Length: 125
Length: 390
Image (cartoon, rainbow over all chains, first blue to last red):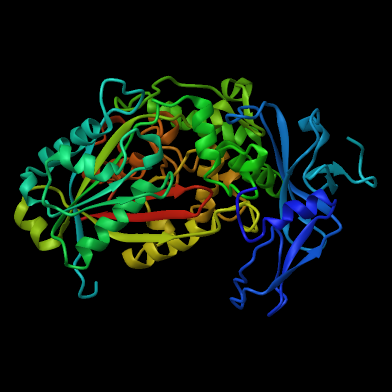
């Protein structure tokens, strides 16, 4: 994580918590989190924990990777039920054909990271 | 027209694009400027401002604009560098247009230039992937093709757009590239070849993507009266619409990923300034960094309805004899994509179309053309409408 006012996101992840930011001035909630409210300009904010249930908005399997990554891997963009959007990887070994737009997914936090799994109500990966 | 001056394009130059191990970035820029000066038949002393579009991260040379301007021998002209990722050339045109239209400058050289092939593919994937949000996206190994793959996948989901329709755009552009001596790739391809090429970021195959390249292009913009005095004989082309807009740089805050809202906004401005509608456009250069990018542009520019890009392809709307011929010089797909040069390259092609200089790929009688240049996933978009004087 790069130095930032919301770097605490990583510490919360290590505690197993996935958190969005909420403006103390107007209640504007953001995921990914942000410290400075774009709506009311307030700098006062707090963390709010999210459940991680989400719907897959789009995804891609990357076959040509940047330096430091080894392809292939599947990345998804999910809309969280509680609002906001995240990008996260599916577990290594997931195939493109295992995934479809609109499927229910869970953002799973473990070992300080977050990734996507098919929700139990959806087909297994 | 209001009281501000009209902006004429009096000269255009364009190097061969491709792997240019024979020249440095400033030498390529010189080639483009030299050709534009010969085209306009003016001396470089007529130039009183320089706008350079380039992405400096690709070059060894720091503070690129100074290095280029020095080699071009354009001191004491003021020089600006515009960086807008793959839209850097479009941004330079916008700066040149502002400078001339405001009346502060009389003749501005707009130069897009880039050398990319000194770097390897993985290095470029890493650099380009960081055009996305490094805090919330790049950490997962995003690449630039991956971003447009997310758009393509969603467009397919919502509108039933097919890999074959995307492939047909690549086939079209590479087919036209055969006739372009300045293009990096001059071989025709087939739908099968696209669909059997390696997947780069599903659902985008290798041939859905463009290639990194080296090259430069130049436009000379002039205030209308100055243009008439300096170049009395040339068929005159005016930059009558110059729209620019931004949108979220992150797919996490962009909302809908089936179109590019900044294209719609920049187009609205350009159409309004030029007093025209999408139906009036006779030839277009659209940003085909990826096949999906060109397809979404048909919709965002109003060449077809939202979600109808696939059907527009099926009806051969963007072919040379279609509704709006698009990228009939081969586009970014065949020309190659020296990112800072691309926006200016597009404008050069439209100028040549409007002058009737395009030979086998000339759109007969074209007098109104459009170009759209996109940086990132739409965080910078430039839409220009150009008109030949009747």
